[in-house]
Length: 229
Ligand SMILES: [Zn+2]
Image 1 (cartoon, rainbow, N blue to C red):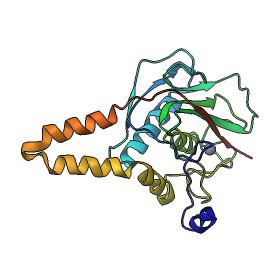
Image 2 (cartoon, protein in one colour):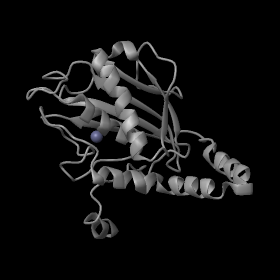
Image 3 (cartoon, protein in one colour):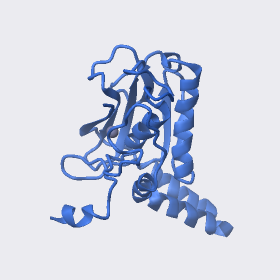
Image 4 (cartoon, rainbow, N blue to C red):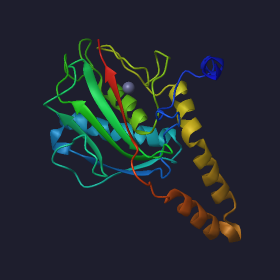
């Protein structure tokens, strides 16, 4: 019943473990490894990097994505690395544009994500009326990588379907979800920088210790996707 009471106010949703814990990163400094050579075009490479930067900006810099060493091929594998890449051999339905797999511990802390996109979806990636917008798809999948689930708002990046020719920017609803998951870290940052006179190093250390909390054992593997129709 509580769900129904809150449903009217919340259009976005968190991804949750089966026991109902919201999932999120405890350390928002997130390194990903991009299979750069798998991208169908130089434009696609650019869009991937821009989409990560867009979520960073939306978080006011609380979330920081860094790009690690490129990998030859992205895959859905529990290897402690966050993979990003395009696949020519696609094991999901062709209408599924992309999938993001999260690995989380029993408390809901995300340990790893793997974000995989079709190299050549039906209609192709592009901005034409019969093509699928890659930037919109990336916004959606990176939202999942951060712990957001699907939204009921059609205009939100986290809505679960996108039509050919449709473009979805980050919507106020997406940002509300992001703030709900990571707003406390932003508050902690503000507190640290506001109290820097004399005490800043101690604050910084305390914050760093909180952020470095290690994930102990992966309990769940959550899977989400984005479809076209
Ligand atoms: Zn999705």
